[in-house]
Length: 179
Image 1 (cartoon, helix red, strand yellow):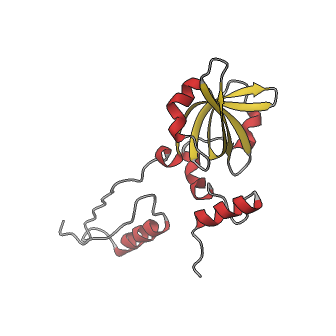
Image 2 (cartoon, one colour; image 1 turned 30 degrees about the vertical axis):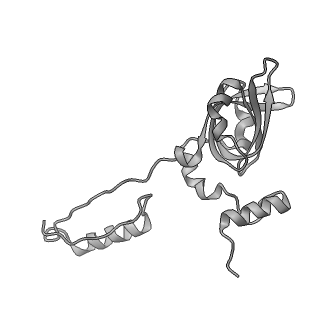
Image 3 (cartoon, one colour; image 1 turned 90 degrees about the vertical axis):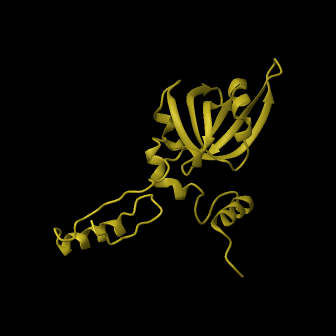
């Protein structure tokens, strides 16, 4: 029998055990989250009331509500690799963001710290799928060398560097040129 794809395996672990056992869905984004200046949930205690924050995580629960005026809003629970926190999606934001609010969505959240009786929560200002928020890979970089003027050692060192540090581009090739 074939092994399950990682996203299915992790989803089943969470469903059956209540937690991820063999990994975390955000693990594949770990290095790229630094580029987005994301604050881990476990570090939010160092932030003050009304401070702006950027979080990345998985929406694990969504509770739609109605205000006294009948406006729709929601309380959502966001989980990252370090913890969980409640998000408050007030009516104005809820009207804009409702199509993006669903369980298991991997999202980038911009919001403000908000102290509540039940603890600190985040008032959501914006939310988008994490894939949309990540910087896109570089298109193409062309490096041309005149091999008549470059020693073989430099070419080998460059090839080794490109293999060791491929970046986010899809791949690389070497092409002989008459230039």
